[in-house]
Length: 299
Image (cartoon, rainbow, N blue to C red; front, side):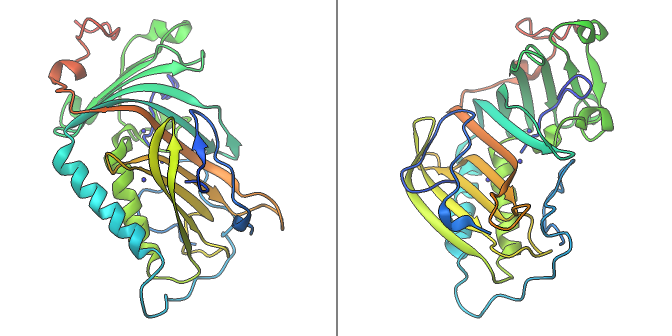
């Protein structure tokens, strides 16, 4: 509500029909009604942005009255406020899939530790085998603003730990977002920004689907559709799954407009946060490359 490979070891980081269940790494089905700019606010991702609206005109101003996005915006604001006041840290498994330079990549699975103050991230890559064992640490205000990363195996592992600017070309290779943008708080914040922007315009359909499930978690799914390509909009269709217990987004999908009339929307990015465990009491040691449970090789 998008968290690296070793030729870029970072992540970005960075929505359903009624009763839809989404398991790990599974793309949600597109409802029948989802047939067929400026990219709006927030971070513009590395790699592909929406292409279907490239030569389109602008959407007109929203009609006077309650915008269809207003209930979704209120829910997003409430969730962001509660997240900031009630959740200090969490661990989870992140499953991400991103389209970059026209190519939809494979699913990547990562174990993550995230602390909000100071913003701190530890990542361990679980799959696929080509990236398994990679580790990344980023702590806001430390290491001159750089992240530390190392490959898991093979020739790349011989390089050892490297220090990279999160937005550098090397760190961003194969990723839509820098590590500084990972996490459910960043996702919730971006959702609020985009909803506030899109609320200025018409041509927006919004549907709520209660009792959706993501990896067994009960969620409310918010589906937003912009039927007509407009330069104002960043996506054709987006789905956000809000965990009913934690009131945080745990899955996000965004699709471009179909490439041909009657075609299917084109997946741009999807992120799922599974097995979320909050307020674990994470300490500086969880984000220290000298931690003996990690393999950064820093002494």
